[in-house]
Picture (tube, rainbow over the protein chains, first blue to last red):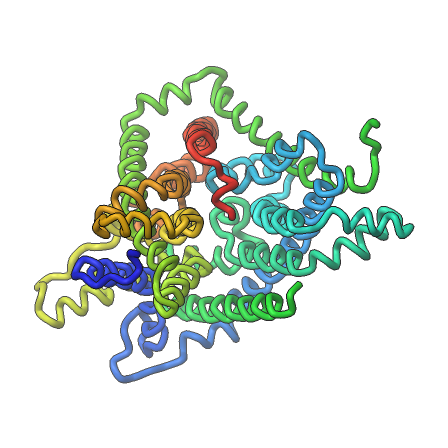
Length: 267
Length: 275
């Protein structure tokens, strides 16, 4: 087998893989030290550490407003995306129509189209109906962008469901609705959680399309970071980045632990 | 029996109906813009193929995308191999290196490169302090920084299809090759690599399509100097208000992506990748 390299070549490949891995972590690690600089501009702290750039995140109204805009949009759009994706996957699972493939293609379309094209499409619609730079418009935008990912999760989850579940439930006298809500949905609860979690993270980070359809009244956190990056490279942005990185890492670990527990409980 | 309109049929149609209304219909509207603004005709498409600026940007986009794709897939192959076949410790290390950046916002990842590559960034300061260079190197706002940032963003996406195919390889095939006296290098080039070709192709297409429509990283690391097609569309739409031309460029990008997707479905079976 090739898995135990004993020669020089093998060691070089191993080293190359480790360096490539470190390359992926490097820019994330690089941001951390510059957030502790006491200076007003981006620089490495030289023995004099300060937390001043973290303070605006707790006190500055613009940053706080962006955090709450992001939370609101991500919460609303992730819940709507999960509901839509679940209804879609369940409907397909029950009905199994011949044209199902075409429906799945349509449901996944915004994922395959480049974000900039999606942005132009969504802008076109929202400019017509006056939704640009409103909460409703932004939530709809995020729903369009994140739902395809939730659909993939839910389709994977329903593909593991046993069709005889439905038969058993119906034979015992349950109606269609009872079967759906009391029998099938409880069996999908991990899929539901995963779909919602993925939608939440994707919406929270969405920037490519958000840039086109928001900007004055509704400014999400990524949009504010983007504006800051374009104007000047401020250490506050580094501080926000570090906080977001920490939150993301906590979320990944929490989800991994949750899934580990799920595997153990055998459901 | 005819399909009766029951609760499950309604549930199934909810999402496709929404996307028809808010995505597919406006897409047709964009196509309409591309042939009607500022005046009816194909002039926007003609301009796309004749305008020196547009051609330059398309050429640069193609060059950057190809370079980014080759580099990302090569790196991804190396990572996927060690992720799938490495010792448990190496597997965990690879998993962290792939997943942590994957989940972190594209903005932060591009910003991280700015911190490293700026004129007064970590790399230049370090090189200056050890005396390797006398003047700071210009690293941001170059094609190099754009390629670096894009590769960094796309490597995890390239890893998944390759790793998925590698996991399906029957290790007895490799043992058989080794058992019959083939060297590890021979086994790799003549047995292992051909078995992973479909994963590599999927990876190439996915990364290329992502790179093509990629907006954030080139805009931040190119700093307005290294403009790629996505940013060009943004400029046409929102800075110079050339709605028709921006729409035509969008349709052009979409056509290339559709062709690539068609290729993906012809050369490989996408359902194998999600196993």
